[in-house]
Length: 203
Image (tube, rainbow, N blue to C red):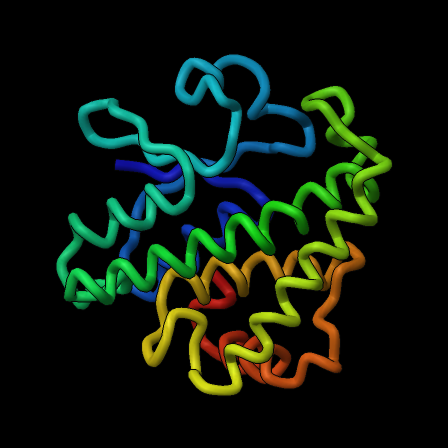
């Protein structure tokens, strides 16, 4: 089994998840800035051209960061980050999906359609006029989450999990591409600082 990885928030999510779980795998780096993920030989492994990508021992491929993390959580020994009850797993999946749809996706596309336009304009359909609105949508949802974090320590409840990892990695990315933590969101800012102190955050 090996992980094909690169720069960017999506691979960071998987690496941070693995670090939290104590999972070590061989890795292969691809240069997404140079577009290696959009041409052969990588496309023969992952036709979608995305990073990261998990290649199993039998040659099967798993893509999509939440699917990769859940697979690793199930097949490696140790305390699962997704939770050890049906309800815990459901809450983790619920909030992971919430973060993905409401923060990671608009934040990422807000970057691709604006600051990252030169890199992405020939790789995907870009909508530059939509960038400000997408960035604003992400901030709206973070304001909602800020209120939620007044009553619980982590995104999905009392236990650190994949939802926290996903949000932390995308916010760390946001901090360097013009979408920083709003200091007015005090609960969210405190959560981000707390998660940033975990050793896995540097993965």
